[in-house]
Amino acid sequence: MAPDTPGFRVLCPTRWTVRATSLNSVLENYSVLQSLWEISYECSKDSETRSRIIGVKAQMQNFDFLFGVSLGYEILRHTDNLSRTLQRKDLSAAEGQCLTELALSTLGEMRKEESFSKFWASLNEKLDDLDVDEPTLPRRRKMPKRFEPGNAPPEFPTSAKDLYRQQYFEALDLVVNCVKDRFNQPGYQVYRHLEDVLLKCVHGDNSYREDIDFVSKFYNGDLEKSSLSTQLETFTTLARNNLNYSTLSVSSLVQLVSEMSPASRSMFSEIVTLMKLILVMPATNATSERTFSSLRRVKTYLRSTMTQERLNHLMILHTHREATDALDISAVGNDFVSARDGRRFIFGRF
Figure 1: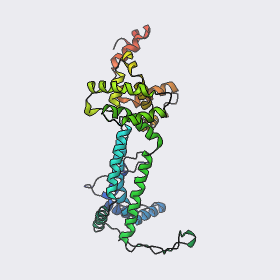
Figure 2: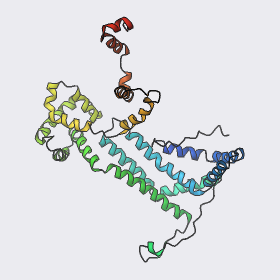
Figure 3: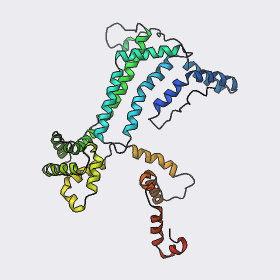
Figure 4: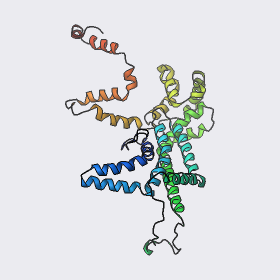
């Protein structure tokens, strides 16, 4: 019908990073979809399908539908971008919170009157090209007295723009509050203090001592405050001499400690304990969620006799595909052959 228009993106029920793309595909194909309903209604013979087509067509002719899809796209394109970034497995809690504050600042700019005026003007421009009704005020309905919070007279919007301005601000406030609640949890703050002890110390920020007080008090018995402070000063010198100062991160510091010999690592015993606490509590659960999603692809109905041990091995290989692809297949085959004498006669050497 329209080869020049982009394709339609289906709304995925599990992936939260394609919401804005799906809504944008509706907006870009709005007129094409309205024409499609008319053609589908003529071609369909089923009464239930025809009634559904009539309902969808009526919804798309309503201004509320266009307003909701447009507002959803404007909000979700920022939250989708934030969600996609937060799913990186090498992202630290401190970096995630900084990126979240940046996204909240962007949403805060959208809550200004100038932003709403631009958004309202763009909707009015779309009305000239689409078969959508003009925005109208609903019939005034007085709230029952049992629901009235006070004696003040009821307020009604004086124009359609005022009505949709209220809905515009309510949607933004709801999204901003949900994001804030997500990152203001007590457990996330504890994890943030653990990372800040390392990052602030290496970057020369003296406020890391406050984080040491919090961490040593929270993990009383696991971390010793005086030893941790002493080891951090030595570890700062080691990190600055062996790592690039501009690319210092928690993952690079963990890699530096893991490459040490056991004797050298004993010099930073408290830091090793601190890193273990960070590693057992990942800043994002995207990797574990992807593991559950891949379980359906690995454990199919054809593999009904697979044991739990074999399933665990396949899941490890599938989840950590980067390490799996880096394996030398010939070396693995030779190790398998050399395990038993009889295998050499059957498989030979690789």
